[in-house]
Length: 208
Image (tube, rainbow, N blue to C red):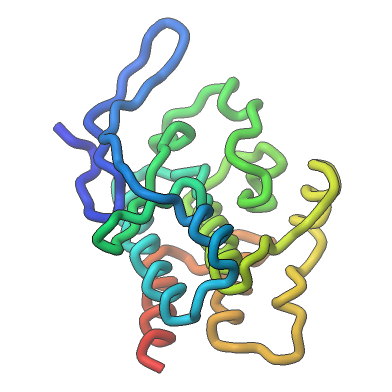
């Protein structure tokens, strides 16, 4: 049967393994990625960002409900369906809780710019690492740029660990910049405890 069935998550039909690799079978989805949209439009309007962020959060909540950490949540892995809904895809790096292998730990998976500080060091991560990546996507949608810009991987890792994203340093703090700041906290303990808490905060922003 299907592992996860949710309108904001690409359908996964099953998972298996051969002698050399593990694999996941999933539905083909057509559409443009959120990354492409941001490249074309730049910063997105606040109301559009909040609407899309709620779609992503809904999907992420369902993924976590199944005990899965996505581990590679980024705007290239969020697809815009023609009807306007968003779908999280590419679970190539997702790992079901409790399934560990030295190879997976040693391998730095995901795309560095979206990685939490703990993931960038190749540490074991939990659902709060995905919440960090969600914060990076929200920052990218609202400001049309990435939170950290660097010339090479080492510089980027240092920035992820030590710096505050430029737009969050600004004197004018908005309710949504505060939400992003919590998502992007360096320590997992200082982020939202789960996606529902994040969604509750997003919901209050949408009302205003």
